[in-house]
Image (tube, rainbow, N blue to C red):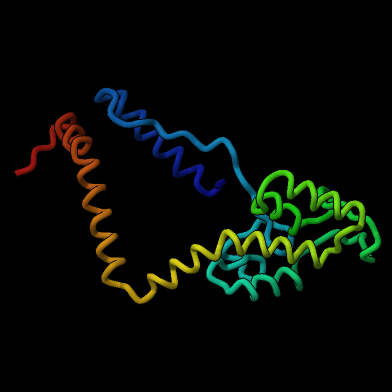
Length: 185
């Protein structure tokens, strides 16, 4: 999100200058108020440039499970399954992702309470996390696999999408050309 701030600011500046000079034409873009940080396996921000820290959405679920089991950071002060844990403050990469992907606030509270009362171990918590990730990723992975061999279909969808986009912006482009005095021959 932070990387996109200069792009949004530049678009805002261009839209404001154009609107001031030629009248209201463009919607001035706003930054999204909420930034979501997805922690990687090491607890730092997940990013595609950090291959060891990230989960590839195209990876098989078993591979994602193995990566979380090996590298996902849970409460380092919890040495035994019978020790209580602190998911809110000491689980750097597992519980924060639970809060993003696990169904419902009740489920995440249940997981936190089970951790705090030593009713669930870190490995079981990681398994539940990957189960939640799988619920989200599997439909996308299935659709991607279905489309993988259909290059012509994908090209047709992109072509049709381009036609719809051009039709949608045509009036705005014509208005901009007219306001700026650009005549096409």
